[in-house]
Amino acid sequence: MERDKRQLQLLSKLQIVYGIVNVFVSFYFYKVTSEMVRDYQKVLEESNPEVQVGLLLGFGFVLFLIGVVVLFCIILTGQSLARYENYQYCLIIAVLECLIFPIGTILGIYTILVLRRPSVKELFSEAQEEKAKSGIS
Image (cartoon, rainbow, N blue to C red; front, side, top):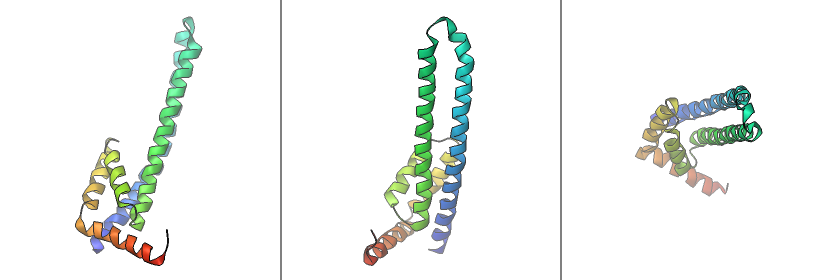
């Protein structure tokens, strides 16, 4: 049981740090995309550049927002793991995290392996029962 608690605390910290670092990576990706669009605009001056550049910038911004939402979910998962809350949510985000290659895949698989243990499931259910007994919603 102590091993599970230590591993969940470690996973919690890793998830939060991974999410925070990736927010900056997403911002950098958006900045690079914006620079590429500015360079590409010079090439497109013959056709309808305003529409094409607008679409590219909009697409880049939408990808940035999706990235921020996903990374916010990863940070929330880290907090939930530390409190032994939202077992299903943590498991779903760990599965989705496997799509973020390579570090997300490693972290997601490790999280799934830890969460699938019966003793970890018991920890989450005990925490939920304590929460219900104390009347905290």
